[in-house]
Amino acid sequence: MTPEIRPFTGADWPAVWPVVRDVIQAQETFPYDPAMSETVARDIWVERPPGLTVVAMLDGRVVGTAKMGANRPGPGSHVATASFMVAAAARGRGAGTALCRYALGWARRQGFASMQFNAVVETNTAAVSLYQREGFRIIGTVPRSFRHPAHGPVGLHVMYHEFDRA
Picture 1: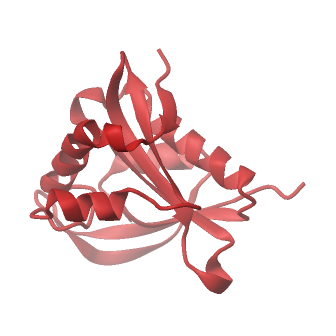
Picture 2: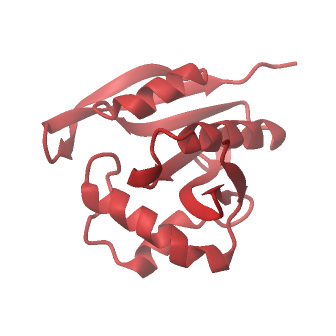
């Protein structure tokens, strides 16, 4: 069963917050403060237009979320970025892939030239593999720039996907 991806609404936050909180507190994939409050998390996670936040639904439940928008303002605004979080219990069921594909399609429709991920934890091999399958390549790694709770200091990959120009 393929997850349904749809735009986030304010009514989704009570279901999105546990996903965001658990991913942040695990300290394995996001460089966010694990003590971050719900209010701060919502301010960071919920994009304002023209950006977009979405949810992944399986069996009528929120199992993941993504946010997307311009990577930088001004002269860098032609490059998109996105971030993804999937509930631990839903991993391996296609939510991450569906969210990534949705973000790539959204970025293309918005007229972005490419998408860049600024900080993919190198030990997050499932995400790195997913992104590579979807056309991203690692263009650099900042060594020992993420403190992983089990592996110690590990690198953060910068990953990039240039869109075809028709």
